[in-house]
Image (cartoon, rainbow over all chains, first blue to last red):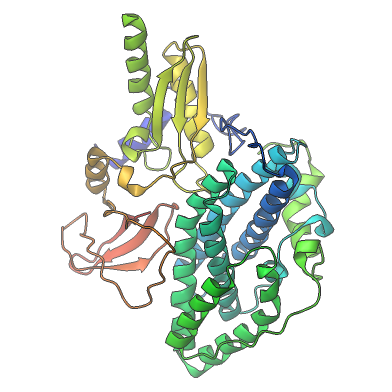
Length: 275
Length: 170
């Protein structure tokens, strides 16, 4: 079977050229999943947790996508875009779960496109600008190490939908953390310039780290990963200096609103459009 | 009753033949994302699909294709269900699927690492035995762990110098 023929099989039985062009009618990422919230679970709390985790993922995905056409190598653009795509997928599932749990029935778009900065509950570390490649890598290392450890815990959450989303996410996040860790070692243990920049990035990330640990107790796991990476990279462990406020309470830096303006602009200009 | 059994088997066969939108050399059954096709008592065909990756953009198309193919074959009531648990693993790609991937120049995955407890971070270089799908040489190297679709990595063969894709273990 030739490759051409293989791709032609996709068109079989689909004379209509507009197939998929206006959506498939299957947009809900949790389509056909039993969405009952089990008894004994505080549905409001569950929704809030899902929104915070989804906001981290959505905002991170947007920052990662900004690297496309700007990364040092094409392969790194592909990698960063893939990581962003995984996170976007996690965000979609989590927003859908939140809308079912909080009883509003809001869909993923309502959360992603029609909330303002003050309603977002992502950590500020996710929203600050990309900086240089070293900063983006160190940030990804922090966020993916934390998210992986947290998702490992959530895989046994009493809500079966959140548990399943987390169990799936663990597999993806392991690749994200691996990518960031390998780059952190390569940069830290590279030239004087890359070492200096990575060291600076660790210092820049440090004030934002505390926010990650307010709702879940995975500090030891994350610190162990960071220690392993900094040792291999010949970098000092960053000194923890907490910043007042928290993105988890809707307190954000001035960088979130412009990010959302770009993310939400088209959806708000054409709220009923499908694409 | 016999008709029902035949109908269920036929529905399963039809759904299993739907090609994957991104790897069309594979059917959804080859890829292991079609988790089941059942015939409910009221005659509704219930097809269950699981995503490969959370962000796989082809999921909606897979659902639409399975539903459309079954309707074309005369099943008027079709229901598509998403199964998230257990999560998809590359181990579910069938032997036939692995053979088809290799025939189309894509190296199939090795066995996914069995896991219990926290995922370890390994920073020392690890050797993965990936054979070139074109010349068969084991003298290959990874160029990027991420590629054109979520499920693949980029590799190259040092013997025949050809780049190739590799479905990674997950």
